[in-house]
Length: 279
Ligand code: NI
Image (tube, rainbow, N blue to C red; front, side, top):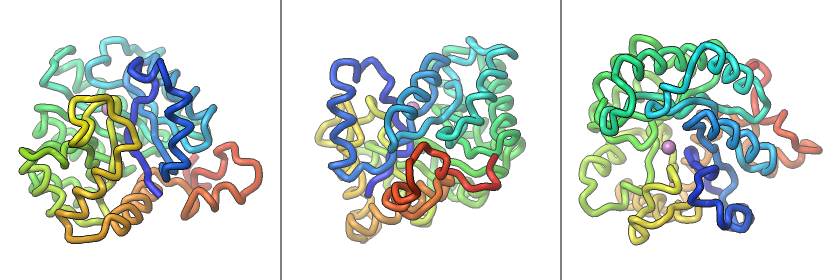
């Protein structure tokens, strides 16, 4: 079974065929998906998707490009959504110095506030970092330091920094980039990080793996990411699939070894998806 730890199925790229596409997930072995918050509207849409589909979970957070829309009242409403049954993470949050849509101080301020929120509600984080590797790491180390754990999504820094994050207890999110011919550093990262700290993700609709590069991505392409990791690690794709699935359940604290276990617990409304101490 496959777990997509970071997706954006609320994106307009899926407006045409969202239901049809999501209906294909479980029959194709995609047993879990976490839909990320990015904008405030995206946070709401993620909740709706999680309400509608048993295999979709929600993350609550505002992307660095969108933090200008936050204020105290809106942050308060995010806290409320964090307490819902199928919210499994705070994300995606972080720093983006590539697009630079918000100034760095504003980005840092709301990154720290949302990291604090993750600590307050005891949820793991999902971190976005683009062209901001050192600032992201410094803030993570100073403010968060593995308190709740989480995933560094679409990891793009050095293998050495990946190891530092793992030391702090974080997981490394690997997606379509690992299949690109020129992705030398990403391949080094996958070789360097312990297998029990690697999770897979799409970031769909973005970052489709080769040979679909440049087209709309979806969780159905994750077997290509699994194959690439298996090649680098000298493992079978099945081994990588099983390990990354278990890793995803562990980092997001989704209770049970498999979807089958979740379903045998009677009427599934998501209550069973988090451990008792996490409230
Ligand atoms: Ni994303």
